[in-house]
Length: 394
Ligand SMILES: Nc1ncnc2c1ncn2[C@@H]1O[C@H](COP(=O)(O)OP(=O)(O)OP(=O)(O)O)[C@@H](O)[C@H]1O
Ligand SMILES: [Mg+2]
Image (cartoon, rainbow, N blue to C red; front, top):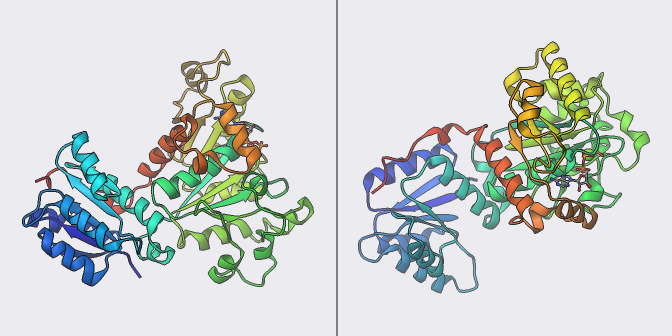
């Protein structure tokens, strides 16, 4: 079942463009051309979200939002995104006071509006509505150039940002099969199921996966590493277990993030070669630079498409004596992403089992990871996201 979106705008061009784009994304679309019709359709047809223009005949967007919120009372909350003509703070505040959950200033790019919609639906709509739309099915591997550079921290928090802030459906796999940290970092007990419960079954299908996947409070799904190292070897490279699992997950999620360990063994190489992107996490020190150079060489020998490999410099503003420019010239390539250094924020999140992207998304570190997640998401666009809305701006 797809989410139903009520588009309220009196301009037929905007109605048409929005309807087209939303349908491309798999949403069902209802349209209203004035304030009175908007309230009527909302009350008769219970849309899952409303896009509400401010300037409307009969009564305007603010009045529509106010009426809806008054009628809703403490009942079901319909998320509303106001479409405003100006970036005027007063207009935004008025919209939010009237009960809008978010606003979108015109002109806008379709990708931006779609991200806002997904994000609100992720917050307010039931999970089953999220699956009606086109899923991206992107596999992203996270690999640390050396131990302790922050690979797990970035993978976990990027997963949460992609889901909560960008409305994507996300699963995170702990690919460090022997010594995975996700149970500790996410405060989950040893009793939770793991990837081993999948590979010991006779066949791997989606129903089995759903039974083993663990749900984190942030809304991100998890596939955990086994609770003790000795069972890790049941995940076999000959049987390509990891790739079999990933292939099934492609049709269930937008993003499948895998936090893999340092060994470039068969299982990890299998995962990397089937990934759509490989994020190599590093810090600015000599041993990392040496390792990144080796990873770049290995990947080119394996004919891994160079455009799929992205360098993530963690703790980028920490003083190490090597700055970004030095690192780039040593590697003879650019660093694609940077995450700021905030040791207290990072370590206290780890030790409390509550990722900062979940509890402190507006911290410096949270904002830095969100920027990273946005860049990642922009790099794997849905087809409809390419449409430009700049001309539909009245
Ligand atoms: N941006 C950051 N700023 C400051 N400290 C950070 C940052 N990112 C991670 N850390 C800290 O670095 C340490 C290692 O983090 P993490 O366990 O995520 O790294 P890892 O590369 O996955 O390590 P391992 O090799 O053990 O798997 C932790 O103490 C964490 O708090
Ligand atoms: Mg780790």
